[in-house]
Length: 309
Image: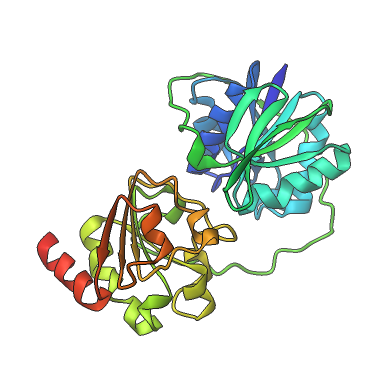
């Protein structure tokens, strides 16, 4: 029994979510192989080979893999998948775009967003915005699974896996890369940040959202937002935390002006320490907060920044 982990990477390094997914795959038992699909991706393959628990790294390198188009990557996964008992990928936008295609072609059930591995064929995953946990047993010969990164420790380095090149599949021609707008920031990446400061509808405007920047700077934090704030145009889409956004579990999560709708809680309630600032003492966010401050955020946040200074 051997699990295949599809690596998410930038050609040079693995994304942090891949390290968590390797741990999830190891919990299923058996060997763990990592598949790196990209172009000029030797650096990412070398990174994968150093991970403890990984026994082999497969590399498919071709120009049409450079931009990670889902159709091409899925075809490459399918070219090697039938020799494995499991196919894992991170439950990120990358993994969620590719694995359902793989599952459909394998005529297998797609087990998404798992938070635990009970046995090689049995997994746990949240349902109803995290209010219940489903235990799912899979009978398919190949189990296709996406793992929620925040629920598994990152695989440590210390391995020395063999790196093997595999034949690259042809370009499917089903899609074409046009352009990419990359947001540049000196702040940590939201999903991997140890501290997150998030704002909600209570911020009132995009201009007011800037009030959170000095606080994030003091804490070395990533900035996040509730869906209400994103829908209102206060913050960009890639800041959204919640059931339909990013799932985070930092050491510290500061929720400012966020009421705490169930969809938002599903994306951050596993944070180690939660601090909430809201002028409504009945706000649902206080039900999950370790520390709650009932106050006007426009007074509390500057005062907090001053104290941190």
